[in-house]
Length: 95
Image (cartoon, rainbow, N blue to C red; front, side, top):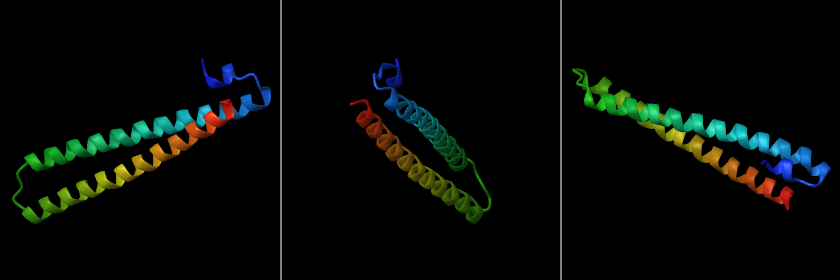
């Protein structure tokens, strides 16, 4: 049962429903961002295990993948913070 289904205050019910929707969307974005990190990590491992004659190009690709992972981890952190904020807002409405 969702929070909105348990709410006895009809005015708060629409706000709760909206927050639940936002939480669901944010959780989906988090899942997608985490999947991107996993793909990039796999690409990095594959890249590291491959052999390349051009060491400079090989190193540049590795650095780019590491940078991509770091950037995506920042995105994940921002999404988690937003999710936490939404959960707090929802808790305040439910009380």
